[in-house]
Length: 352
Image (cartoon, rainbow, N blue to C red; front, side, top):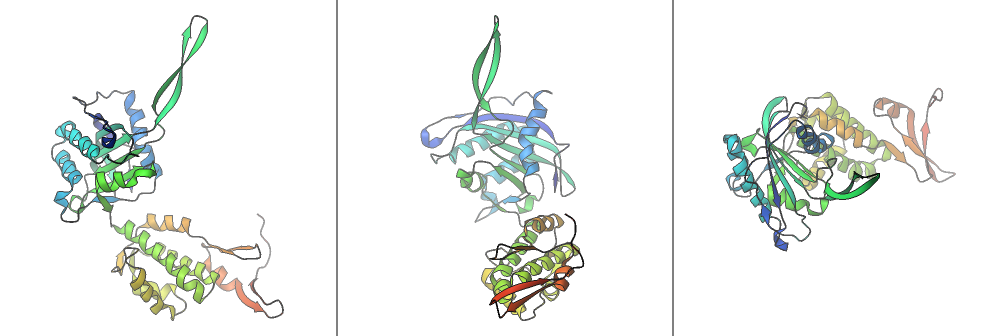
């Protein structure tokens, strides 16, 4: 979890990077930008708004040989070691970005490198480096009085409501490659920003593992539980799975299987499915881990608890009181109509 409410921008360097493939130049400012009380609140909202609104998926710097060969990891370490040198290092960051700007789709734009203090991540107050890029130019109107008339003046600039690209590099978990958040509003060149410029992998903390394991459970429910049982049991398996995660601080796979799988015959099926699909979800060797509550809450919102029938009828099951579905919903087969049916028991209809 992050909190950017008290974050302070200590310094800001602004440069411009072109598209190397189109022979556009790079422009490096000689001095840091002179911040003032009028511009700082606007910049904070522009830089941080997207991070507050986006689901927190963390990254870390990585390299296939060794972390010390990752350019951005070394540049970030150089800044954290001596923050006073950030403007000179910001030029190296901009040149590094320029070197990755080879694809014809990559847009030119301004690069902002900021040194940030007083960020809260995982209940730790740390410094961070912000690297942001504005790419999309918007039209806007200004008006000027000329005599007894108002003249319209068409101008061009960036929209402060939407950050095009950005990352926050926290001075936290250095040994793993720092903890990083990234934003990319323009999806056509994601590989250029994440893979080529930052060179990052997903940060495999408890939040990552919890999300991946629940995604794996969704796959098992759809591919194995539904064909073996029915749609109701698929929904109820996911409900029991999420409830297990919600009420425990530590995940233990053997306890999980005994608690959530009503049919013991599905336990070996679960283990076989993990052998086949575990690598896809990055949980092939995972049997125990701390559970991240925020990931469980996100999963509960995304999991569907509705049975859709081909007769254009929906049955919505209650995740808060799952015992109701177990007790009061039955599935059967009608020989006369040659159709399945759900039998639902109740005392009275509730008002909407």
